Length: 71
Image (tube, rainbow, N blue to C red; front, top):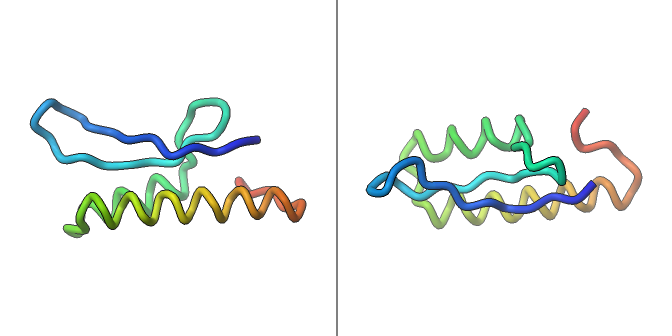
């Protein structure tokens, strides 16, 4: 399975946010919950983006060592 960071904007003038999606195109629930929390507590979009990329890298590493990241 592969993972990607996807940029989100809910409306034309809404704040920018990010999520991590699997190869099925669906957000990874645990990551989505955490990134939503960050945004809701006032973290800047750059902070949310940084965490999204780091979490994507972590999930890729988990797969490389043979662990299921969605457990």
